[in-house]
Image (cartoon, rainbow, N blue to C red; front, side, top):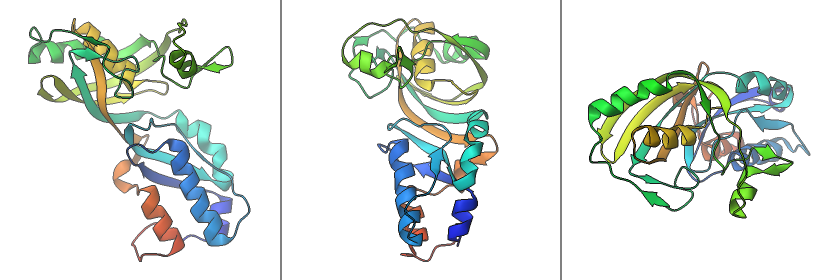
Length: 238
C-alpha cells in the first residue's frame, strides 16, 4: 500500500473509467479517497486526457509532482475499441443525442466496409464534433450546440495509424483504432458513415491503451477507494 508521501511525491494511477462517469468524477473519487485516508487538506491530482461519459476505459491519473507529466502523457498514441452504428446520424455523433437522420445501408457490403477504412489511414484532416469541450471565442462548442447556434469549426490534422474492423453485424460495425492525440472517434464514426454513402454514429467506445499503458492493468475508481481506505483486502499495486 502506498503512503501519504508516495501520493504527494507523485503517482501515476491507471483507472478504468466506468460508463456514465465523467473524467472529472473519476479524479474527484480518487482525490476524496486519498485525502480522507491521509487526512490531507489538499493534494494535486489530474488526468491525462478526457474520456466522454458514454465511453469507458483507461484514464491516466497523476498525483502530486507527477501532475507535471500530464502534457507528456497526453501526447502518446491511444488505442480504442468500439462500435459504429450505420444508417443513422446524431447531432453529437454518438448516443448523447437522438437520431436526426436515417440513411440506406442495403448497398453496404463487408468488402466495402474494409476497403473504406483505407481512406482514413495516415494523416487526415478531421473536424471535431460540435458537441465537444473545445473552445471558440472563449465559449465551449457544446454550449453553442445546445443553444442551437451554428458555428464554423476548423478542421485539424490528426493521424490514424491503424483502423481495423473486428466484426460486422449490420448495422453495427466493431472496430479497433490506434490514433494520435486530438483524434475524435465520434468524428471518425460520422465521417466513416458518410464515406460509405450512408450515415453513422458512435454507439460504443472503450479506450484500451495510452502509450505503453493498458486498461488490463487498471482498476475502477470504486475499487481504488476500497483499496486506499482499507475496506477490502485486495492484491493491488496501490
